[in-house]
Image 1 (cartoon, rainbow, N blue to C red):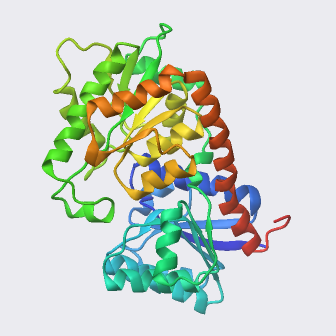
Image 2 (cartoon, rainbow, N blue to C red):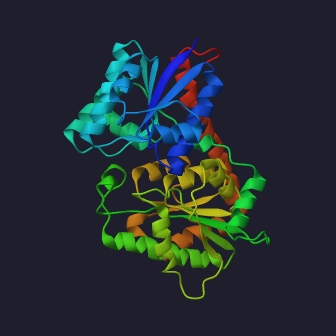
Image 3 (tube, rainbow, N blue to C red):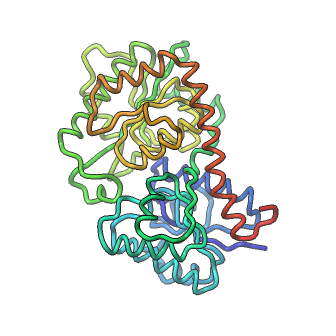
Length: 388
């Protein structure tokens, strides 16, 4: 039986590696379990999704009426992954309308591996509670989201699973090695360390949907600390600053350039990548690294996908939530308490007992991958897929 489905939620129209990795992983997991799934992506740039993924896509900004009709006639609406629930009236009202139309048309609604920002407004809480309570399935990617939803009065069963992107497979090793060579990193036997920064702004309105307001001091300190940590790592091997997003308004290339100017004099073997690589390519590169110092959530998740140990800069509940699922919250430093000494201390904890630390980490990662697969298992059961 063909299952006609629509998915929306994450920033699928951007080149952000995290959002693209989520979409690829969701599609792979569902296609393996629901072979007759016909998935259409609802997003702002349908042409980008069609070109990048070969998927049917439709833009709510260009064809709103068609989006509404398609959802009302569909068998399934998937809201997720990423962080699609946050305080924005227009955004949340749109989600609520989609959910209502899908249910009125006889379809099912699934919240899939999602997070919610801290909801401070009455409309944000109202829409989120209504959407969750009309959903036929709710899976979230960290306990902090599950706890918030229960406090909001969500009475559906909430399954805490994991981010689908942790199941993403990397590109072939030779392709990843070719990327390192193209970025000027020689295959000389020295270890490679990746640093994945995050562009933060305390002025752009885009910020409010993704992270809290940080002071100028915090923003400047992140750049200074990452420059000094890179210099420390460069004594051990090659360091590459790897952007997870090169699109405005939060391009990591911009912050990378600022960090480059802060490197201590005489620092060598630090490379700044400015090209936007695809999720499997990023995962492949991370698989060749000894350690990743990551600010972006999906730098941590894709490192876990390829079993590369991480030290995290914890800037949001979703980051801490992911680390807690890994029982790895100790290998992190809060962005508000950031210092070079604190990050270097965590780095040396990992590197000082590397084999034992990695073995423990890999065991936890593999267990978390099974939890991520539960998202698709539960959804397949919901739509009555064979063998579900």
